[in-house]
Image (cartoon, rainbow, N blue to C red; front, side, top):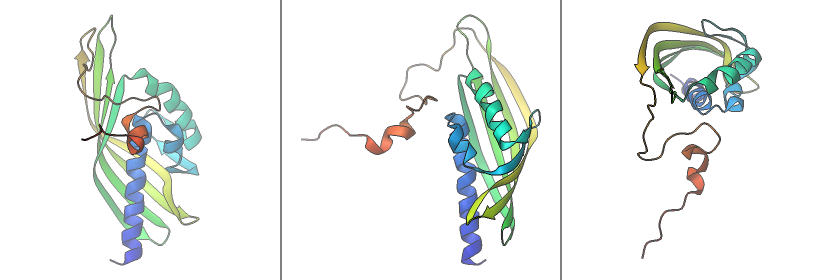
Amino acid sequence: MDIETLLAKQEITDVVYRYARGIDRMDFELVRSCYHPDAYDDHGSFKGTVDEFIEMAKEFMPRWTATMHFMGNVLVDQVDRDFARAETYAVAYHRREFPDKEGKDDVFGVRYVDRFERRNSQWLIAHRVVATEWRRVEPVPSGSTRGAVGVWGTRDGNDVVDWIMDAKGPALN
């Protein structure tokens, strides 16, 4: 394997991880940055352009109290000049809590199967299909919360990932 192929694989893997951060933090410009402007996305119940996907996500994602897309195996293969295939195994966790009625944990085992294209020296998603392998839905009792332990992730631009580089620790004597 040559250095150009290794660099392509790393750049593509970084895009996969950036997508997870963007969708979970509801940073839709970060999500958009993972796709070519003319990309196509097939999420099963949604099929359309990247712009249509972003608009759908802006409506869909706030319904959830929290989400976490855990990217597991990322296999980038068939790297051929400006084209590559990536298959990413993922567990997509969605939690919905309500103070006065039952919520749910909706967890999917999926594979993101992507055709990446390098344009203008940048590897981005050109075509994505989400293949669902399994789904588990469990009730969340009314009034349940995530609790008050530690730092909880937020989806409003004030998440720890947004401020960690400017964080100051306690002064040591």
